[in-house]
Image (cartoon, rainbow, N blue to C red; front, side, top):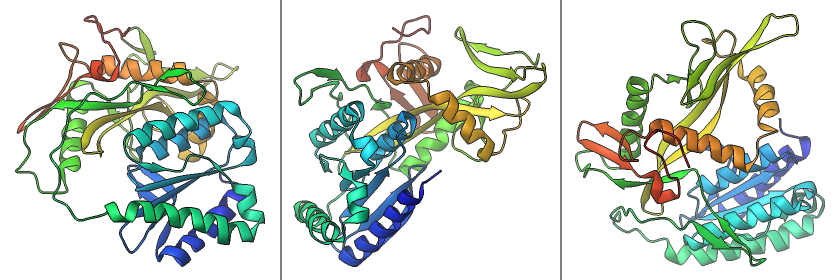
Length: 350
């Protein structure tokens, strides 16, 4: 739930972006998320501002993920003093900025202090306005109407050197498409829609994954015997009981999968998560599921998240260490090894 300061920041910044650049929207829908503040200048330059306020690691990583996925021309993060003061959060943010700048994106290199923005009107009208104006002026000359470029399938960079001289593996949840047919018959602008429909049809028919009635995620449902479900040696659906022995709810491993286009490339985006149901079938209301998800994710860090991604990739792999999605025009092929994930013949991951 958003704090009062978070809401005030969104309102203030939305008003200022509209005043300075002409148009702005709060909670702008994009790729299944709601971006805090999104505006577009008369030159067509898009500006995305994400407010990172909750000091929990789960919320921080969720906001970072939205910044990573957004295709806005300019990205700016505004954070609470508690977030800015944590070295681990600063490091994660620096890694993201480095990765995106190497892709040619304009990403402001520091998290701005939201408390100063709320308290200092002079800072907003001078420093913040000047910063955004300079970023827009940097991007505007590059915004020209050009023919849609041919999609590329290069191998992504897997490592970067951080400002402190240390090297990190930048293994993301984006897996590049290595090959696919020429979908010229697909209406322009609807390629992602076509690919994602093919993806969900594949998930339903081949993996028996159940779509969530509200969200984009799919999950393993309760087995017919009413006991926990195990896939590739991992429990993916299990009941949770009260101390009295009465059933409380079921927890299911879930995943949101979709194709996205970034920097003239197409990727399969893998977002692991959980679904909670009342009886192994019926999802519980989101206002009750939210606290359960937050509690469960609070103890999961980078290594656990990576293990979740590897599990889903090993589940999706068909043969020859590749993920193959059939369509009526040919197959879409994703090679997890190109993103640094090695899948063994037995379905495990190393």
